[in-house]
Image (cartoon, rainbow, N blue to C red; front, side):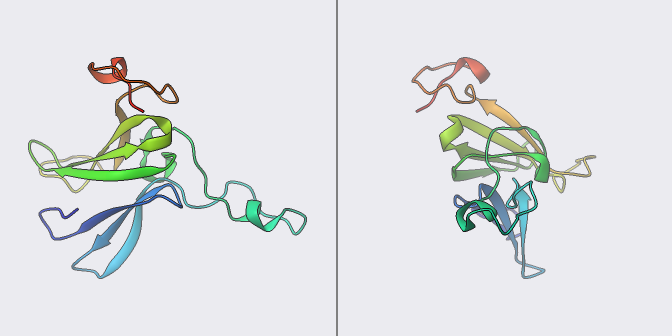
Length: 134
């Protein structure tokens, strides 16, 4: 999805991240989520586990946040620049408040849970954590 500056936001489901492709800088950066394993790999670990991306549910600043199978993004710029992410296996909708937003005094992108209860699948209309998603 594009923002007002022509930047593109994409979910990387395999690495549990949200990626920003900068039009002006021709650069690709991880905006939110962690694409690296927290432990130092060893030669005794199976290859599959050595480079497994981190996943889970954790709100926080961009790289401190964790996703589990992000699957879609939506963008809004009014009243603040924000990205909404369907975090499929956590069964929640996440919000990323962008630091570059209009009038923002933030210095980092902040990820919060907007709707749903982490790891509680279901179907329930509601506001915030009162809602449930499959």
